[in-house]
Image (cartoon, rainbow, N blue to C red; front, side, top):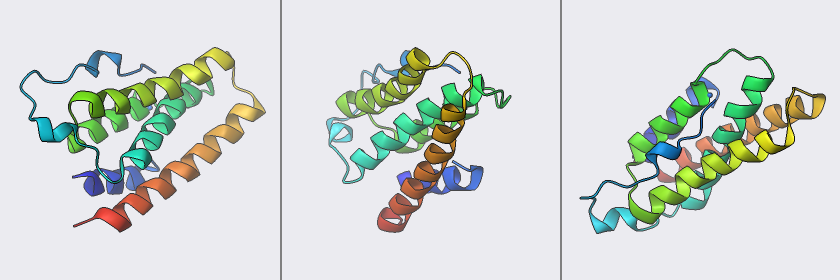
Length: 135
């Protein structure tokens, strides 16, 4: 399922609240959904980038609202992870968000540079996942 969301992320260019509330897995999730996918490391990195972008773009006045959080939700909806796998993906989004929240209170040239780099890296990861794992 992930290649579809990776393509959507690419099309959008890769959005202010962490997705903490969604960290609990469904009670009836099948056990096999918790098994790691071969692209999980990339997926977790992409989640961290989305969290970072949600915070940084907001403090830099992008007026995108929940864009990056919504991208994260779309990624979770598409991938439908459960158990530990879901927890790890959500934790990485929150880690990206909180890491910059602790460091930046206002937009700076360094924050702008981080945004550009994360947009590039996120697009590259989405392309790579799509190229390797698309059906």
